[in-house]
Amino acid sequence: MATNKDFTVTATTSAISPDIPTDYYDNNYGDEMCDATSIMEFGAIFCPVFFSIVVILSLLGNILVIVILAKYENLKSLNNAFILNLAVSDLIFTAGLPFWAYYHMMHEWTLGEPACKIVVFVFYIGYYSSGILLILMTAHRYVAVMNPLSNIVSTKGFYSVLASVIVWAVSILVASPASIFTNDADQNHCQSWHPSVIYEQNTLFIVSSVVFIFCYSQILCRLLRPTAQRRRNKTLKLIFTLVVVFFVTWAPFNIATFLYSLYRWQPPLITNSCDNYKALQYALYIGRIFAYSHCCLNPVFYVFVGIKFKNHLKEMLKSWGRKNTSFHNRQSRLTITSLTSGEEFSM
Image (cartoon, rainbow, N blue to C red; front, side):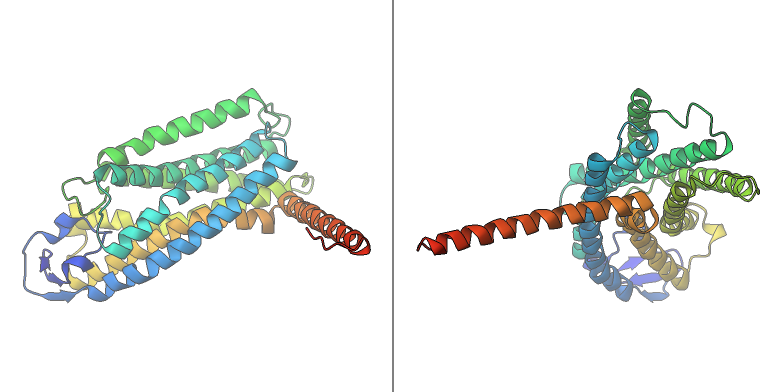
């Protein structure tokens, strides 16, 4: 039996949600019965299946993006360096998803405290690096539209490497508190619900949203002018789409975690009740599902929105097709030759 301030949560021990800290269940405040078993079953069934699909799509998509960049694009370009790092960021984030799927399926963390800290650390590195990279990509596109003669627009080589190193250094630095404050009081659960972690996460989301809104509102005003140069519209459309995807996928997660912080540390702001408890549980599950899907969506929009990526992908597929055709023709010629000589031979 687990209880909350104004009600009692009824669920078996194995059905306790990994999204809610264990001390949430440790106090006896009332006698109102609140059956949360259906919520736990929803997370246990849906989350592992969904995460498995995301892992497969993310691995295929992001590896394909890296291959296309390496084969067809100039990696010394600052914009291409950002896209490459974004694909790497998504792959790092993806590496933690099988562990989260296992966690939701088992209802408890059985892999030990060090593994928990690493998985939480990987989650936040993926989150912060994606946010920072999209902020820089947006700022770079803003400068390219507003001041196309700026040196920043044509920056490449050493500065691309330097920008990449700074992005990862900052991401690791700001992700460290999440690992440090991961709850290690209960070895059966893996959470990082410290206020500093949640509010730092919310802060990046707010800052990135402000940057996106400001830059793209200014860019839109500039492009609406009759004399505007629209040669870079395709790149602009791609980056804008990636920004929208980041906002849509991470907004529910940030809102849900912020509401939980009010529920946990500011009780008068959100009344503790069975209905609020269930709503918060579902919000956390759905928010996490949206957030985890982010890593597999970027490659999809590279293909559907990015003209260059679409053309490169077509060229690569044609190249593979020519190789396969050449292989089959060579195989047919060898088989025919071997048959005419009276021998059975195939490749």
